[in-house]
Length: 238
Image (cartoon, rainbow, N blue to C red; front, side, top):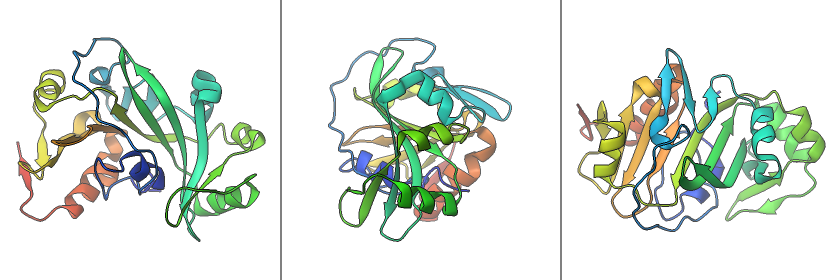
């Protein structure tokens, strides 16, 4: 299911930064712009994203391949898990790591999963509580028993918002020239690297956003929704 960019969790993450009509639907964490710093090279740094065929390794995880259990083993209680949903909707189950150190570059990491609608509705019904997350958006934290039971749920997407601002020059130095830019020249550009399953939202007035999916899912989960959200003349092949 196309959950990666239809998740309510992200818009809150990006409130005041960028509204994307891609894999995630609006959520509720506000991110403040940071000062520019020189990134440090390390295996888990954002620029160490590496693809092999139809799989990609990023932030210490593998897509496809990594599961919620892998994330639990790594972050434990530091991993927040909840269903984020609009009233009456299935929503999406998402994991959130507020303080993630990506090879010396701190930031916030969002993990997207793929569960069917029936399971998502069941998790809402069995949640210990329902927390308001703004407007008609609700947060349903998972019980400990549910966290354990859902360990095999696959991760299908990762989003990283660095605490330090990464400007366009730094991004080009680290990732190279994108294969395609959607909405070039505007405040918000989307740089696409399909072979690595990577899309970067470059915001001239806000925080950057790195999104990663398996390369085989790139067209469906990232490029197609972004193209659909842009005007026909808004993309420029490189």
